[in-house]
Length: 413
Ligand SMILES: *Cc1c(COP(=O)(O)O)cnc(C)c1O
Image (cartoon, rainbow, N blue to C red; front, side, top):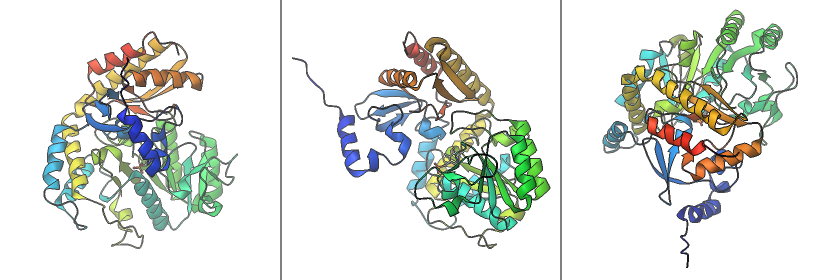
């Protein structure tokens, strides 16, 4: 008789569905795009994560790009452990906040003043509020498909044509809330220029991801961004760089610096929290001083600057700083993985890659699903959608990469 083992994972997911909406706390975790039951993970070590049945996976999701050192980096875990023993939260300034701010400013000089928050969503939302308060203007420009967190007025897709009213992608967002959001096609210089000509003095800020990480991977276009910055300067609008996903991902610092693209405010998140919830926005003192308590733009938080989070972030940046020459190798390894996967999976797989960030796309969705399920079954965890980015961490070894390529081999997708 064949003994049937009960999957602990399946039992847990049933329970998850009883108590959590769709069994998850964030939509893409539900695997809607690829079907099948989503995984629940119990622990992570370096490049691997483990589900509740004890099965291991090579992780290319890395908490949506946050864990650039891989899971449970020993130094990060040790420092966080020390901090935990000193108290979990004070609701007052702690030395670690100063040190993390200093570390960030050391490589992002425009970040003369920093405000920490608890998520990327909060960072972008607050930066936009500050830009509006500072300029005393209301309109903002964002680009089609760019994701900037779930603030109401940023959940806007493209209106048809120039400057038509943006349409919200989510129910529950009143039309009035997004009427000051102008959505433009990415890299459409003419549309951008026309928008500035028409609304110039009403535009508080232009908001962009220097490289797209939330609609498949979209490599940066420095020329377009520089043009956008020059237009913003001409009309007195602020430039807000959303580097929540790109900050410290491609180099030790901001991607905008690499591209030679200037900005007034920068939003950070993900990597700078070392795996704990974080967001930050920063800019020149002259702008940041408009924030309360110095200025009249209000933004507050119970947990912002939490010492445990700050310690995870600070230790991550310390370790990363020592690895800063290793980014090129991280990129080379990713290039090798992407090229080999394309070879193995056949001509219908197209990988869009920039640095150590890549997304997978097949000619037909069903083939992606087939590929995905096979890889997952054999211990490779990719982002469960063609539109989500995958990442390499400094913990991924050549061996992990070879194993991933090996699994993709001989597949019929
Ligand atoms: C992840 C992300 C956000 C939102 O950050 P959360 O911490 O999930 O709120 C905002 N902007 C970009 C570019 C992101 O990648």
